[in-house]
Structure formats: structure tokens, C-alpha cells
Length: 219
Length: 219
Image 1 (cartoon, rainbow over the protein chains, first blue to last red):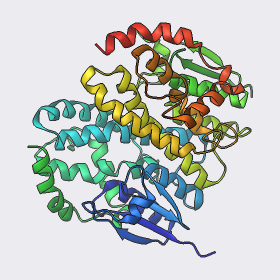
Image 2: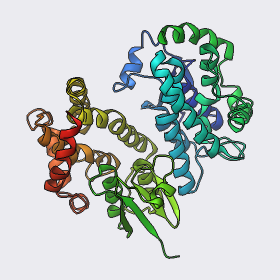
Image 3: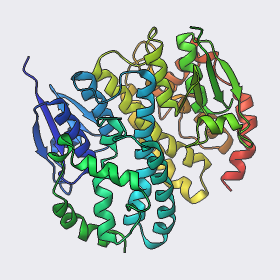
Image 4: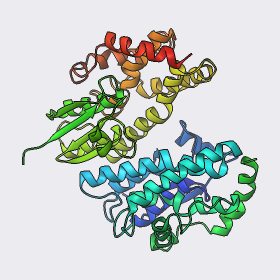
């Protein structure tokens, strides 16, 4: 049967780009539908009625929402070039760290740059703690996944690219070579990895897109 | 090799009971270590240094934290009596709803009973929406998992038991037969299911334990 794979996304969304990286790693061909987030399409609302958000993957007519759920689906459906490790314990650790990034690191990183002045102070402290935890977890590995990128690296794309953009716009200096040498080394390896490089949106376009939004949000 | 399975938990925690239900469904024997949450053991802090929370499963010396991560590990390690469905798409749907319960329903249900007066009002509206979403998802199925319980049922134990306790203590009347007939029918089937019944803490003990805590928190 001919496979029909559609991806509803938004170019500047790190969650959307996670799914693109996963599809790219598997070499899965798909039709891309760019959503206007200020005027979401009836199809997006039909396919993700609960959250009404991108990304949504539609495989042979079956819609799947939530980037982590989509990545596990992709890994289970196209089994070559595995994204999650093979052993149950290693899989559990990868899921643990993906969850940590989504539930702890991402909110703190966002609030440390996008929050109102008062929120930002607390969030910077939290973000610093969470980055330290990730720096320790990375240790001397090239990637969170070991010698090659895996689930945690894909999920950490917010740390790898977006947070740098938010830092630059807001003038925050938190994730620096001096404070987090291992994470910064990882970022360098990450953005230059074949599967990542081709999927990343241009940094200057991200700066241009997020500058007015972040400026307005943090006032 | 003789398996060594240890579970660090707390009797009144719904997250801990999720893991107990999963182990019970698999018939896995384990040593149970009850934690004093006001004075956590050095072993718990060693095994879960990031979150310092129960539940933690330790399998042959390898610690795993976070109830959803532990349940997936249990399902991948002991493959009989599967908890997640077999097909990738059904697995994705189960993971989607488990995530929805944890990230949307649980916070709203908690704040609608545990929150300060002002928070409660907003949270009750949100909780009502999320319960409607779950009522729709359940539809005419006996369990979220279909004919038997699965991942979503286990994760929904907060809805199945704990929220009823919180409602009774706080005097809220939200999850009622009249408003949510399908969810209430599910609760009845759920608490009487063999794998669940034997693992549940006695309702009167939960009322006794949570009454003074909830009273103090919501003032």
C-alpha cells in the first residue's frame, strides 16, 4: 500500500521541528502543511480537537498529536535507524530525560526569557538548575543518545537552538561556554549533525520572527 | 537470574498505586518500601536525585522514576498481559490520553478541590471541560482500554478513586452520575476490577488521611 504521510506544522515551532527531525532520520517522505497559527485550518482542528495545536502527523488517514507521542509512533512504525534505544532500561532513561526536558527545563527556559520581569528572576534560577542537571547527564558523551543522536537530543532541540535565539533577543547570558561547556559543545555537534542541519530553520529568520513577539510578551 | 524488584512508594499516592496496579497485572513479585514523605530515605534520594519523589522502581539494581516511564518499562520487560495495545497507532492513542490526564485533567482536578478559593473557581470550569473530554473518549467502551483495563485506565486512577475522595472532603459536586454517567459507570467497573480492587487503599483511610491536609491547603 502506498503510504500517505502528512505533517501539519509551523516553521518556527521547536515541537514541530522535532517531528521533522524524526521523519528525516527515518527517511520518510511526507506532505508538509504549514499552519497559520492565528487562523488555524479546519483540518488541524479536526485532527487535533483536544489541543488544537501543531504538530499533527496524519498517517494513512490516522491523526496523531503531541510531539513525544508522534516520535514514539514514528519509531515503532518505521523500525530502521532507531530513535529510542533497544533495551527497556535504556528506553526508560531516554523517556525520563525527554519528560524532564518537557516538564521542567522547557517551562523554566521559556519563563526566563519570555516571562514578565518578576517571573523571570525566579525562572532564571530554575533554568540554571535544570541546565546543570542536563550538563551532568550529558557528561562526556557526544550526544545524549551516545555516539549518535536519539530521542533526548531531538527533544532537546529547544536547548540546542531556540533558547540561544531567545537569549540573544532578551540579552540574557545563561547558557554560555563558561557556565555550561558540555552543553555548548553538544549544541555545536547538534546543529552540525546531518539530520539536524537540514531541518533547522535559519537562525536569522528565527531572530526576526521572535524579536517583536518576545519584546511584547516580556513587557 | 533471580529477579530483584523493589518499589519505593507511599500508600496514599495515586502515582505509586499506578505502578502497583501494573506490577499486579503482570504478576511480578516485589519488595515494597514505604517512604515517609516528610523524611525521605537516603535510598530514595539516591535512586531519584532529580525529582526526589515516589514512585521509584528498582529492577536488578537499576532505578526508574516517573510513573508513566515505569509502566512502559514494566510492559516492555514482562511482556505477558500487555498494558499498552500492540498496534503502533493504538499505542499512540493510549499515550496521548495518558498524557492528557497527567498534564490537563489531573492539575485541574487537583486545583478544583485543593486550590485556594479564587483558583478553585477557574479550575472547576477547566476540570469540567476535561471530564467532558474523557466522557466522550470513553463513549460506550467498558474501559478506556476497551474490554479490559489498559494504560489509560491505570493512569486515570486519580479520576477513578482519588478525585471522589477530594470531592467528598471539599463538598464539591462535579463528577456525579447526572453530569458524567459514563465516567461514573467506568468508576464502578474500575474499582471492582480484580487487578484494581486488591491494590486500592481503603477509601475511609484516604478520607482520614487527606481531610486535614486538604482543609489546610484550601484555606
